[in-house]
Length: 496
Ligand code: NAD
Image (cartoon, rainbow, N blue to C red):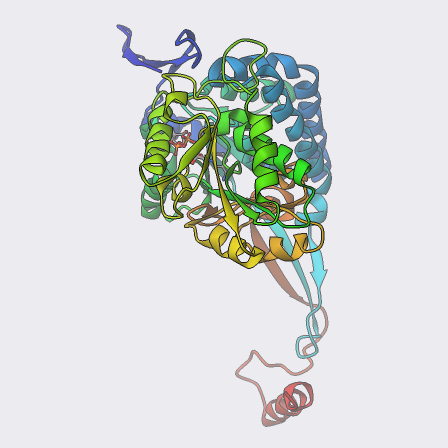
């Protein structure tokens, strides 16, 4: 992508096809004033949208899901052009979003609507209720690797909760962002409930400083820190969906063939540019050789390229091959071996699949997010050792376990926001499950009930429903009132 300032003084940048370098679109670089104007428009739209009932918002969201379904190949083409990912992978990504839209539309009222809660005996002269009100305007800042699924994880849930959204897609995928916003306007033409702003980091920073009611950020931990600095000035809350260094564990009793197949897809699909992609594998020594044999057999025929037969696309960011090269070089220098690929696998735009073994635990390929079609495999003497190694990471996003007996137990022991047992990345496709991480992987949640509440504030109302039983909140309180209270407290809590 290149930035230019045209003679008309409208600064623009080009979105490029990462496989060829061809320009596929040109977009404005919005400045702070333009971002502020979008947020002001969003605030008016939020009032209208927030006052619609859940049923009406749900209807519009379902209609949007219908547009995405009918035009899925058109959107996949735009995503393919900007990210380089194979058309079929782009289609899969969009298809996974459709369930989320349907779930959020259907469940928003149940999760967020007003509910009566118990008052307890002391306050039994009151009724009490809680509901979750929309925050107002949400700024969504997205990455390029899953330019549909990832930002929509915030956008859909924020909209279903009654907020307006100002969306800044990655500078690598502005065309996908525009497509999404334009298609939403087809089903909600009345007001700019979902708007697009485009540009680089400065445009994102302007959104953080614009007075939005929350920022939903998905991207790298380094940028997350900058976002939090910018948001601190206005005390704007943030949800951070950061990077990952996810581990896959294979126990001695696992179905080794299925584990190998899942590991290959989890590590190499989307050219390894997946926040919840498999980057490290820990295999029980009893099945290590069998697993490595099966995995390398599956990896060898795979190839990165731009032709229709290639299952792996290019690196979307031109700077990424250098990161991958650095990680492979560090691993090899420190005693690691490449069973497939290696340093020669790293080209200017494409990286061929690389499988590394004997890589020290503290080398870059095991500690930093590589975000390329590479994976490390280590032999472990026990699953306790595997859990310790998996947890020895500053990240904590997802995890995968292949095991017959202990799968769920191991899943719970891994310090990560999500885990899949005997399948890979499946948590992302289940709308009722919250998605998010711990540590450098971020905080806050998208998807599911937690994802809806993330874009709301809890509104608690206590309402007197009968004359006061004990008249506690008055200077007219009597000694008899105090006595009744202490007697009641002793009855209720005195035995604790
Ligand atoms: P990035 O951090 O470089 O950029 C993300 C977004 O932040 C872009 O839109 C960018 O323009 C914007 N930005 C950059 N500087 C900014 C600033 N100072 N203020 C405000 N906004 C700014 O990330 P990326 O390279 O686009 O995406 C890859 C990263 O995203 C990886 O680390 C990946 O693991 C992570 N990711 C996480 C999830 C998740 O759900 N946890 C999902 C997808 C990707």
